[in-house]
Length: 378
Image 1: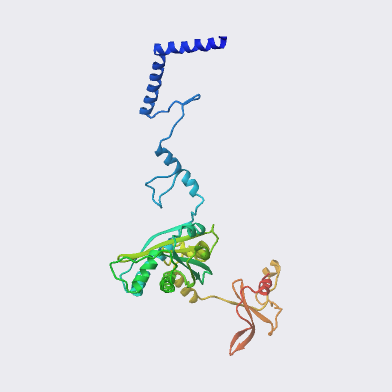
Image 2: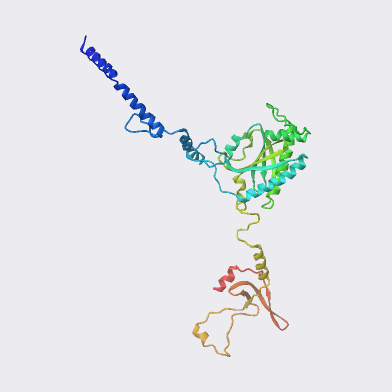
């Protein structure tokens, strides 16, 4: 046998002797005690290396990533999820827009009751900001999308009617039985009758939207086209921000959702109005005070002067003037006379006489900013 075989035999014998002495059992029990105590106390577990390593549990991982089963859609996000969502839309709040859509809900409740001859309840779910491309990708199909134009704002908006509301409206308008849910037929496009009935409902909603904006500003919403494919309803770039309003329409046991999307570019012309806290806010202006000031200004008396001529004299010569001295003016009876209020030139006229009074006939309208009159003052 070689020396290498002898060394291996000796090493094997040495391990057998250690095992018989119970050293391995003591080492294993020691490791078990260390692992068990750290699991119970929630401390760091030993790992291969120079020091201990912290192992996170599932709750800590969820908190780090910002995900939780109890999170609502509108809840505040944290962790990595907040960083990801920071690229989403976060724009200023428009208080007046909430008032406008609250008014829209009341108007729609009345108009849709008249339209369907049924008990209709309209409720506002929420108003949120979203990117236009994200909204198009989130539309559940099949659905009908109405593209409308805000005439005075010179831009477009989008109205989406979901499948449940489409079948419910068709069922109600065509005399479907009450107490039964609307029948949904999957796998086929909407018929011409269904599209026309929904189009009529969309026109009613747009007319209500016009009335809802009326106290704020005059806006006409004209329906341009109706689409069933979101790709053909692109009214803005995918990255553009928009306001999304979700409305719920209930007709007893039937109903569905209507979503109204207005790009921020559409609302930009009336942005200052939408920043108001309440209807009619004038940002510090007082209509009563304005009316009172205008009334007082119209009744105010002002003194005007007819200037025949102006001359520059040394102060010493002016101080030497005595009673009876003659002061010659460089003016004739036909020279133009300037009318002033204080130092402000108003207009010019010709001097004349009416009875025993000296009169002036104006040659032009009032022009306080006339350049020639300002230069004559200098």
